[in-house]
Length: 158
Image (cartoon, rainbow, N blue to C red; front, side, top):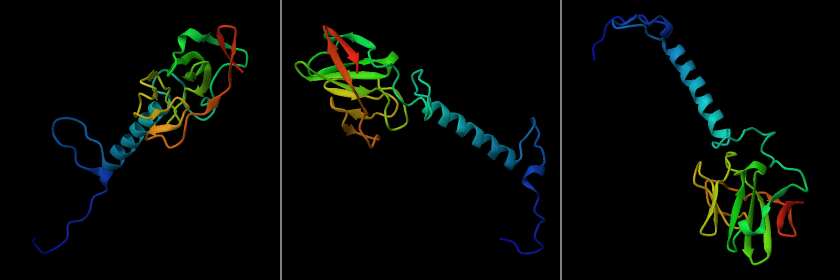
């Protein structure tokens, strides 16, 4: 370390260009990185699977009376995802159907599968039981319940 007269500091935005092309000052680079980070956050909160993120669209779609599908699509000890209505229907016991929101409470992604008795969110690995309870995070709260009924051989939103 040498002692002597300190060198005057230079404003970060007035950095001397290096040979080989244009350069950005530190403030411009930080601003650009911040904008890129906001883009990543927006992409993560958009549902990751074609859904629209944000607070207003986190509520499942589909009006009461909407037919989701036949009971035969929901196996005992498993379930089915009805993506267009943002609903998961599980059948934990024969003839007992449970409706759940298909929107993961962690960051609003759509769950995409029910495998081995677990509802799976592909975005960050959260897993839920057939009753919506958190089995594995990062989600800290369960899937919201959705009222469903069976009318004949069809499962309908109540």
